[in-house]
Length: 170
Image (cartoon, rainbow, N blue to C red):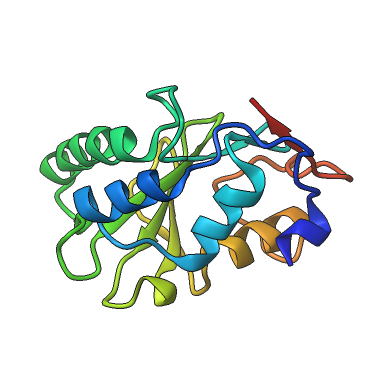
């Protein structure tokens, strides 16, 4: 579905191999099938010069899934300690959040985790706001909806997406 809205690159960068996926599952957790299929098809890169999806094979620490899980967990602990009214459960707590991407504005895209990774839904934490914006769908459905304009995420700027969203491998 997403690939009909945003074409994948001809030569995706840093596509994970079976060893990388196995390592992620052992070190972190089992991940949703739509995410793994997305990374296999798109690799490392940026959606419409705005959304970056973390990739376990990325050599860039700012885009590496496992490194960003650690980094974002530290950041969220600080948010939880400073916010009196808002508490964001952290993975691996039940319904805890696990980051899968970031925007150029610093908004973080998360999965809200449940038992079955294929039932995880999306939450967005705006860069300058603490309540999570929740979307009851998987990652690729969220990305497709945002890119075709059928889903509005209040955290994202009004000029996103462009009229013809694209993916740039890096």
